[in-house]
Image (cartoon, rainbow, N blue to C red; front, top):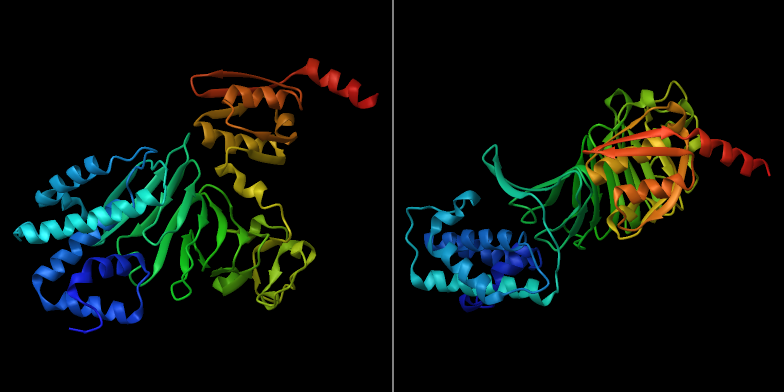
Length: 397
């Protein structure tokens, strides 16, 4: 037993180990301590279960610690309550001393969250087993948004129709999550363990960073917007060639899943990657003889245009109505149809602050000649000929 660390401090050391805040010598101590006895291993696994559960609690503005501990005590005594985590050996009988120790650790974990003032709502979270591995899954269904706090302290906002998954081994050796849909990440800094987001066939690697990823499976693009910090994008371009692309703050990178949907003038040659160039690549033309990467990059963008979906003020700028309709369908869980294709090309700019769907369309009517009807989750958008004439008259005056 290392004299620097004492078993009396094992609770604190386990929490530091699980949260990724421990030092290398502390990691070595915990790993050696686990090997000493079966009881140590079971204690560690149960604390790990509690740690994962505590990171997924639904927090209210008024948190009743006493009630939470009573519930946790009942769950701890009845080990079958943890069966969904696949950690507990139901044949192992726990002593009162071990149970009391676990309760003390759980109380410490809960207190950490209470003191930090976390107030958030998690929607549709569950633990599933995939290929012998337990996976934590957060889902924000259409018509809702969600916030998740990961075990390492990273905060994630999920847009409507999005799913975030990560292994219960998250942060032990690496920090990796899988995103389907759209998410904004505020990553806890850890230079030794980069934070990795798998989005379709891209790997987005970050350190201490704030960034947005939009990667809905039905869309032809994956869009990464970097607010602050540093991000490295890794993936495959044409001819299955690997590429690495480093982003800087206030940059927006669009990766085309199929380069056929990208104009040739917007294809970025491989030899321009990783050079730290600050020019917009829209006008760079790839030579046919060179392998290329289907990437488009914008610099000095207004990042709030791509991240404000998570805030109370949603900023929309020059968005085609057909594209805005997709965003509204997810946000309000409705289906929107157009009776006139001309309407799809109209562009809308504005700020939406927690308005209802009907209020949003009333705002849209102020800027373009449309009428609409809403019934049982179905929205029909029509061209208003009367408004169109009035807009034309006003425009020519």
